[in-house]
Image (cartoon, rainbow, N blue to C red; front, side):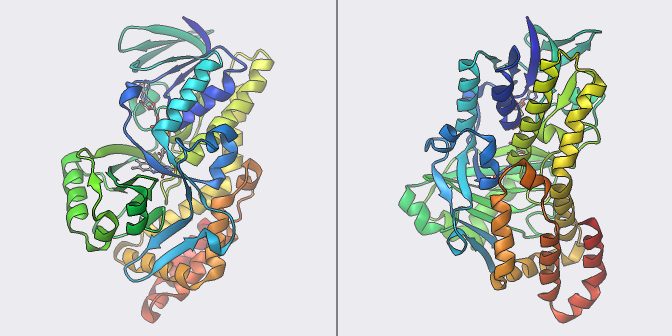
Length: 423
Ligand SMILES: Cc1cc2nc3c(=O)[nH]c(=O)nc-3n(C[C@H](O)[C@H](O)[C@H](O)COP(=O)(O)OP(=O)(O)OC[C@H]3O[C@@H](n4cnc5c(N)ncnc54)[C@H](O)[C@@H]3O)c2cc1C
């Protein structure tokens, strides 16, 4: 079957792009999974994601069951709480991502797009005027433009088409259930982000609280799956700090292991091909936030390819450079922030815990810093993202240095100075 555009991957990047572009091109969306078996995913969806989805989705309580009102950046001693009530509107909503994806796929089909799941693409052949896509069930499709939105799950295929691939990490999480009142009694924030070097040196322990479910997990180290599950069980059964949050809730027996890739690749397009979202390493390197980057890269892909379609482009490499240029322009400052934070929090060796604890203390003590963090949740749109102000992150660094114990302040001053050059 012939299409103008084939999108590989119906995650947030691919499903969101599919919905935008289907109005302008005959589009096929393929996914390797049986989407009726997609695991539950309870995620944080800050206001800065809102302008990339439609109002009807945002208002749908099945997809977005609850407002995100408070975050706890939890340290060993201090809780760095961002309470939206201190500054104005909520921080965003909590999304049941698997339900949002079902809805986006349904809407794509209503708009005339073709969706097929259980179609793992295993090979792509290049011809002068089209690409041929072959799936593991022996189906063949052809298209003028192929879009990789395959997250971390088709990196070999991506490499085989001449793209670089981002650095791979791994996460694990599981869900707990209870009624809304019990969840609220246990935990009065929607998002808890906690660094403990005994858990991971590359990422946080997190809790995301929805309406009648919460997920708990951690991100970062690249250990074998069995070790990850044992560690998660150990945390859930024995880590004192989190016991009150899960007390009396029912646990799903199955934990979900998920790869996550970060550090953007050098080039996001090739002749007749684009890469979106996590497959391109567009995930913030400190928070591991991937939904925003997936949505924004889908938006950029949509306005750049729309103009190429209107001009009967053959999607040559030169014409697709527009997409690369836009991604670089829009994310430049935002990723400087991510890189600076990643350096400060994950590369401090034996001082890592000390630095995290100084951050949580700074949030606790400093209203200006809390406001800056609150405002980062609120970034309105692509222009605001493009103009992201990194001086706010330098302020955060100054507060953290100031709140360190006296001797550490002196020994770590050069470390913090280096971070200023990244920002
Ligand atoms: C534990 C964990 C918690 C997270 N929490 C948050 C959060 O709260 N907020 C946030 O913003 N981000 C969060 N992230 C990151 C975020 O979820 C991801 O970065 C984002 O969802 C990636 O979207 P994507 O569409 O680019 O890729 P994916 O969601 O990975 O989608 C890729 C799709 O491609 C399909 N696919 C793969 N290979 C093939 C193939 N060969 N053929 C056909 N289809 C294929 C897959 O089946 C999949 O459906 C979290 C990540 C993890 C691991």
